Each structure stands twice: as structure tokens, then as C-alpha cells.
Amino acid sequence: MAIRSYPVPDASSTRPRPSLDAAYRRITWRLLPFLMALWILSWIDRVNIGFAKLQMLSDLKFSETVYGIGAGIFFIGYFLCEVPSNLLLEYIGARKTIARITFLWGACCVAMMFVTTPAFFYVLRFLLGVFEAGFYPGVILYLTYWYPSERRAKVFGLFMSASAIAGVIGGPLAGAILTGMDGVNGWAGWQWVFLLEGIPSILAGFVTLLYLTDRPAKATWLTPEQRALIEADLGRDAEALGPREHRILASLKDVRVWQCIAIFFCIIMANSALTFFGPSVVRDAGFTDPLTVGWIMSAAYLCGGIGMILNGRHSDRTGEARLHCGIPATIGALAITLVGFLVPSSPVLAMLALAAAIVGTMSAIPVFWQIPGRFLAGSAAAAGIALINSVANLAGFGAPALMGYLREHTGSASAGLWLVAAFELATIVLILAFVPPATPALERRAAARAAHEPA
Image 1 (spheres, rainbow, N blue to C red):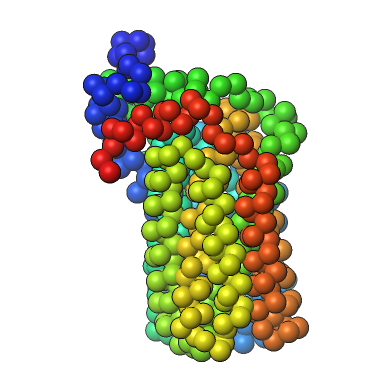
Image 2: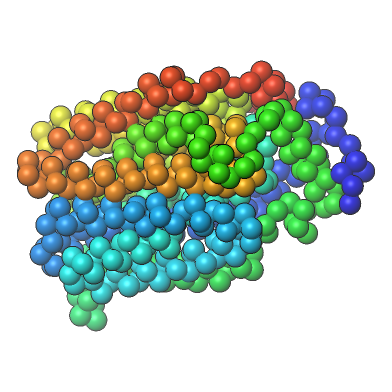
């Protein structure tokens, strides 16, 4: 099928826009709910350790340091396997790659219920990182196959808001399991958390094989005209972006990739600290019931999800990514600092600051992923995105380990929170130093598309 059979005028023309928008709406409704559901399962299985901790540490006699290392060692496995996983996705397709990832992380989550020693705990958390490696950057890469750059921040925001939805669902769910299932069949509540939250991921792995489509050209659920419109629009986007690096090895040596790593490392420091120690901070503020802790974290993540979507949408409409990433990160850093001062003396204010920290940190993440896509493409994008995510996510090891160590030796989470806030505050400095503004061509495309969208 030749794309020229369905010519599409310049983006400033109004005539073809409804058809193109309809094609993208169909893609969004087909792909995003399913990918978001997988990300919800992934996020729940990754962070349920933060809720299981409320019972697990006392049952197994683990220290805060043991917990911090175990929570963070996930990211070592993640680091080692992300680039190979994303390159595999580029060659064998998203459907097979994502199905494998989903099934294996679910099985590893279930196995966590049998943990009895620190060594076993470390091994399973490491393997969970190995198995999940490639999912998040894989989906980021996968979505670039379907959407042009001026639509991606909103789409990334929608997808990544699933982590907020996971927080909304996962907190009360884990709290309910911890309190309601404790002692059933002779198992502790934390064991039931891992079992009941791991099984759906195993089943989802099989569903993925039947549901996902690798690229627009294979999408039989689009009409031939819609497939041609999408391919033509993606081609014009590639022209607007100008020359980009396609070679894998060259992308790994590109200084801009390593600048992106530094920026994302600072964001992930804060994100990981809030993820793995958020429930503990809520308990430190005086809310000791696991179900109450779950509902408080749920409300905070709901606000975070809204922030991600709104910030991503506004970034797309303006074509601006730098400040849409840096300003929310700065808000998150200031809010984390406040949390360190307010716990446990001012519980309500501390919880408001915690919510603001989660909103700021989460809102910065989807817009960040606009930045590497502006200079990487093809296999270089597969390797570069995975490298950025894998190396930066080493902060996911460092933050929990440091938080656990400082908490154990100071008796408070405040010192760890202030250290994490300093890293996140560096985000805006690095962005302004290293990330150039969008090209005029991208800004014109964003403005033209925004002019045809309802306010």
C-alpha cells in the first residue's frame, strides 16, 4: 500500500485534521488502556514491598537497612538488563517482549511470599528487576512507533499516570489485604499481598500475546486510510525533527544521552524515595493503621496522576518540554524538604506536603521523555532510551538504601528526605544547562495542532 494514495496536506490545514485525529483516537483507545493496565500491575508488584514492610520487618526480624537494600537492589537487575531487553523489542517486536516481561515479574512477585532470610529477599528483588527490565522504556519506545513528537508528552503522561492509578488502587488494596487476610491459611498478611497481587500479572502475560500489535502497518483494526494517514504524519514528524542519531554505539557515546541520564537520575532519586518510604513517612506522622496509610497514599497518587496528565497536555500544546519538566521537579524538591521538617510535629501539613512532593515529582517524568526523542531514532532510540532509564534508575537503588541507613542511624526519615530533595532540586539546573529549547519547526507543529483542538 502506497502512502501517496492518501495525501495529507500541511499540519496547518484544517481539512484532513478530523480524520487524522480520529485515527489517533482509535490508537489511543486501543493501546493506552491496556498498556496502562500492565503498568498498574507492574507498579503494584514493584512497590507493594513498601506496604508489606509494615508487617514483614517485624515478622522476619529484618532491619531498616536490610529493607532499604532489598527495596533498592531491584534496580541493579533493572540496570543490567534494560538495554538488551529494549534492543530485543526492536528486533522481535513489542508483543512478545512485553508478554515475556509481564509473565516473569508476576511469577517473581508470587515467589516473594516465601521469603525467610535477607539473602532470599535480595535475590528475589534482584530477579524482579531483571524480569521487569525493559517494560517501561520498552513502552516509551513502542509509543514512538505510533505517535509523532507533538502528541507524545500527553500520551506519555496518560501512560505514566497509571503509576498514580496504581497508587490509588494499590494502597487501599494492600492495606485491606494486610488487615483482612492476616492469618488466613496460616499465612501472614504480607504473604497474601505478594500472592494476590502477583497472579494477575501472570495471566496478563498471556493476554498480551493475543492483544498487542507491533506497529501501525500491522494494525488491522485501523482502516487502510488511517494507516496511511498515520505513516505520513510520522514521516513529516521525522522531517521536522531533522537529522537524528540511528547508530546504537554512537547513541551510547552521545554526551546528550549522558546529560539526560544525569537529569533523570535526580528525578528518580526523589521518586524512589517517595515510593518505597512514603508509607513509612505516613506512619511516622501518626497514621498507624495499614488501611489508613493506604488511603492517604492513594489520595496523594491520585493528585499525582492528574498532575502528570495536565502537565503533559500543556507541554504538547506549547511544544515546550524543558520548563514543563524542571518546574514540577523543583516544586517536588521544595515539598520533600517541607515533609522532613513537618513529620511528626504537624501531621496534616506533612501529608499535604507529601502529596505536593508526589505531584511535582510524577509530573516531571512524562515530559522528560520528550527530550531524548528529539535527537534519537530507530535502534539508537531503543538503546538510548533503555540506557537513560537503566543508568538513571540506579538512583532507585541508592535512594532506598540511603533512606534505610539514615533512618536506622538517626531514628528519623528527615535527613534522607533532605538529601533526596537536594538531588531533585538539581534537576532544573541540569535542564537549563544542557537541554536546548525546541526547534522552531516543532513549535510550529505544536501550535498548528493546538489550533485545531478544543480548549
